Image 1: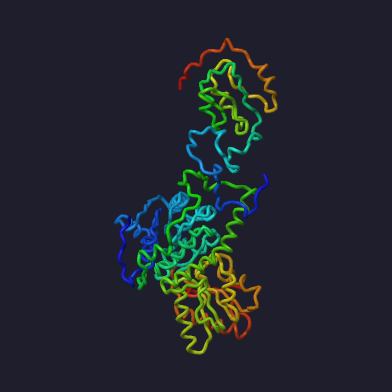
Image 2: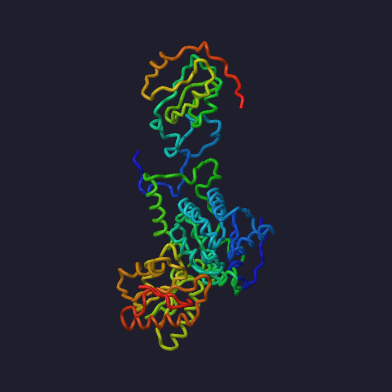
Length: 138
Length: 406
C-alpha cells in the first residue's frame, strides 16, 4: 500500500477499526467484518514466525483448548469445531501444541517451510506407553 | 440541567475563582485533578459547583498529576469537554501526558498557575513551569490578571475545540500574584458565556459505538514524522487566525479587547521591554512614568506564547532601537527563553535593535518599578551606543555580587 503524506490522514494518533458504521459486531464473524486497512487484522505478521503449528483433524476431539489458550486468537473455530490456524496472525509460540490433550497431538510444530502433506504423512503414531498425566504435587 | 448562578456585573474574584467560574460557565463535563498550590482553588471551586448542582459534570479524584492528565485524556477521547488545573511540580509530573494529549489532538484545557520548580521547593510564582511546557504541542495563553484568567479560558475552549484546530490549550496565570489577588472581574452571564464557547462538538469520540476507534496508537519511523508534522502544521497555520477570530468575537460580546501580542506605548517606542504575566502591567506603569520624562519607552506583552507569533512580534518591535527580554525562569545554562525567541524572531528583519536579557523574579521575588526603571536606563544606553553596554544576560533583584554573563 502506498503510504499517505502528512496531510493525507485523519488527525490525532487515531485509527478506525472498520470502514463505515458497524452494528452487532460481536455477532459478526471476523471474515464478515468490514475491517479497515488500518486495523491490525488486515496486517500479516506471518514473517515473525520461524516454526508453524500444523493441524491434523484425524486426531482432534474439538476440546477447544487450543482456541482458548491461543494468545493471538489465531485458532479458527466454528460451531465449536476446530477449523484450522490463521497463519496471517499466528506467531508460532506453540502454546496450542502444548495444551493439545490428544495422543498423538492434533497440533504439532514444524519448520515454517515444511510442506503440509509431507508433515501429515510423517505424523507420529499413538504412543502406547504414554501414561495419563498424573496430578503433580507441589 | 445545571442551576444557573446570578453573577454581579463585576465580581471580586482572584485569578483562581475567575478560572473556576469560567469552567463552570462552559459546563466542563470532566475535571480529573490532583490539586496543588497555588492552583488548588480552581479545581476545589469546580468540585464545589459540581456538588451543589451548578455543573452537570464529573469531578474525578486521582492519585497524581500524571493520573489527572491521563484521566483528562481518556475523558476527552471519550468525547467530553475536559479541563483541569495544576502548577509547578505537578505540571512537571504531567509532562509525559501533555505530549500524549496534544499528539492525540484532544482539546483539553489546562489552567496552569505558574510556580517555581524545585529544588529548593518553592510555592511562589515564576515561569519555570510555563517554559517547561513550551515544546509539548499545546497552545499557551498568558493571563496578566484575574480578568484575563477568566476571559482567556473562554478563548481557550473556543479555539481548542474547533475542528480545524483540535489541540489542547493552557491558560497561564502567575501564582499568588494573580491567582490569590482579588480584583474586580467583569463577568458574562452564564448564558452568554456558554453560548460564546458553544456546545461541545465531538470528533472521533470513543463513545460513538457505531464507529469504533483506537486512540493513542503506536507509530514508528514509517508514520511518526507525518503525525508530528501534521500537528506542527495545525499549530503554525490554524491556531493564530482562530485565536484572532475568537478575540474579535469576544470583544463584540464583552467589550474587552485582546491581541495576540499586547503592545503598550509602542507606536513610536525606541525602547521596549518584552515580558509576560503580572510583570506586563508593572512595566506599563513604568513606561508611562518614563514617557512623562520624554523617554520613548514601550512594553510588549506576550499573550500567546505557543504557537509563537513570530510575525506579530516582529511587527510589534519594528523600529525599536533597544529591547530587553525579561525571563522569569532560570535559564540553566543558556540565554533566557524570551531572549532566544526574540533573537530568532528579529534576526532576519530590518529591525537591528540591541537585544539584552534579564533574569528576574525567581521563586516569587518581586519585580519592582525601580528594577524596570534600571532596565530602561540600560536600554537607553544601548540605544545611544548602538551596541550592548551591559553583559547580555543580567540577573536583577538578586542579593550578593552582581551576576551577569556574556
